[in-house]
Length: 294
Image (cartoon, rainbow, N blue to C red; front, side, top):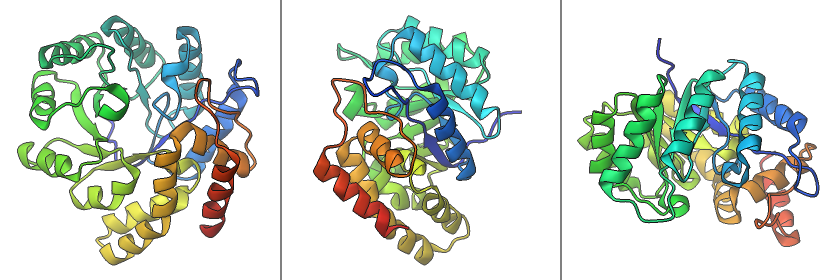
């Protein structure tokens, strides 16, 4: 039976020691338990918030395996397996499947600009290597590759296990177009925090968000209000959390979420260099935003 992904999909962080050199897996476990206790509908390890691009292959495998064991199927899991090479992404996708992931997420990251044929072949190769669903991830701000809706839908048609799309361009019209051209048959997920309400109204099946590490109850209340058709309540809930959602995006996901977790009693270290942690003015602003939501 295929796992249904919906609702609030929480990104995990990857905790490090204070010097940034060693993984802190016990802290990762605590952060995963917090997400589960916050009633997210799924958990997504090793994405942008999880600093997957900054880990060695050995570290990536340690974090993937530990995360899946700690999640322990309490909620569905989507592991980000993106890599600069197709071979690397295939290797990671197979590892994730072998260790119990319910799905994988693939961002076509590249140094050289990829043609549409190269992107399609990348997804074909990964799809042929595993049996679990693939979430196609479009985020040109981090990958340097922007996939038009027509290409996304072609990949969905031609690669059987590419069954869902995460759209993070920040352009709500992309979601409307996905819904229209996909004839409402392709589940899509919002990856841009400030668009959460608009995305749900546009038909998004879920919201992939790092904010669930800090304000899971508010995120969940928004989703439940949308499900119930209580749009005025959803609007009020969204605008209440919007200042924090915007701050998280502008301040950088690893830096802001790690700082916020530290403020709530879970020390997870700073991002791995060259990325800096949140500076003092940023920490003061974050604390005031969190205090306002308590």
